[in-house]
Image (cartoon, rainbow, N blue to C red):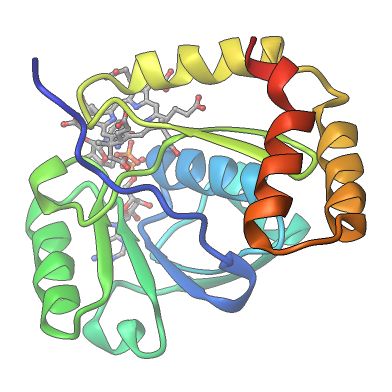
Length: 190
Ligand SMILES: C[C@@]1(CC(=O)O)c2cc3[nH]c(cc4nc(cc5[nH]c(cc(n2)[C@H]1CCC(=O)O)[C@@](C)(CC(=O)O)[C@@H]5CCC(=O)O)C(CC(=O)O)=C4CCC(=O)O)c(CCC(=O)O)c3CC(=O)O
Ligand SMILES: NC(=O)C1=CN([C@@H]2O[C@H](COP(=O)(O)OP(=O)(O)OC[C@H]3O[C@@H](n4cnc5c(N)ncnc54)[C@H](O)[C@@H]3O)[C@@H](O)[C@H]2O)C=CC1
């Protein structure tokens, strides 16, 4: 069986600079899901045009809109880049420029030109679940996201908060703490 070997990480997007190139449908969708998960993300978007919905989304978050075509100077100070223009040669140019400066890049319409994929994301308080189909079926990622949004209980955050408090009160060395926490949470997986 084929296997997903991607390694998920949870980025502190508040202290990272994200560059989105292009201001069309895909840019708006990527921005929408990025801000849904991480409303405090720092984003810059460079595009000759922006959709009304993008302008509205930008106002709600920490998003800077720049009306221009892409040039590599925009990569300065950016930690990750998502290219969504409708011109494949520009997107590939972005990929090359990012590679040259070791900046993580995602070309939205072109999986071989992605260092990372965006995923389906469910957030319930402190709990976050991220879903990937290895780029094989974004629609499945969306459906799984909807499924987990539905089945994960809203009060799962209370459990996490309570365990965080309990964790602070446990005495003993690391092994003893792990044992107590495992014993306490056993019923969750039984
Ligand atoms: C590889 C990846 C790269 C990346 O974009 O990061 C990628 C690539 C492509 N998407 C395409 C199409 C669609 N994408 C969606 C939706 C989402 N796409 C997302 C991620 C990813 N999309 C990455 C892989 C994720 C994984 O591993 O599963 C989600 C999860 C997250 C997000 O976008 O933030 C978000 C759902 C969010 C949610 O609902 O929670 C829908 C469904 C819909 O909109 O209803 C469709 C139409 C139906 C279809 O085609 O399936 C096409 C074809 C373009 C064309 O044909 O022109 C390509 C290019 C290709 O595959 O070659
Ligand atoms: N990953 C995904 O989820 C999906 C990817 N795609 C792909 O994404 C690409 C874009 O699709 P749409 O957003 O629908 O197109 P669109 O035509 O709505 O938007 C393209 C945007 O790129 C901008 N642009 C053009 N040249 C530019 C330049 N030199 N610098 C900066 N911005 C520039 C345009 O002004 C426009 O805002 C297509 O190639 C499509 O195949 C499509 C659907 C889903």
